Image (cartoon, rainbow, N blue to C red):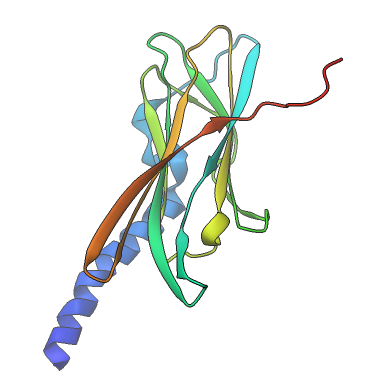
Length: 175
């Protein structure tokens, strides 16, 4: 039994160290191949996406909870123009900022992608977690694609589902 636990512990070390290394490296380092220089032209177009995610899901009246890993992907859907990401922020169920993933704005090459990964063991977001992604461009550009993939298991079943980002639009009285 002791040997089994030692092997299990050794097998889990690279995964945990890798998860910490990804978080420590940041988007700028982990996705350097997807990035380009920020355009010198003024950023004339901008927008934001709200992405609901589920790092935890209540299974029955709060007594049973399933935890899921979350991968947020931000895709530049333009074939020709860079996309500037100004903010990628992760909020918990109560709307509190959990983590900000950019130190400064970054620019994605055409058709490139960056990701943020949250391990299933990171339950800081809770059942009502969400991301906000602010973006900009120098001019006309295809709207980015922003979505999150949640993966986890409950008992012997494995589950995966996607949550698509929604553009944040102000709705109400027009002037």
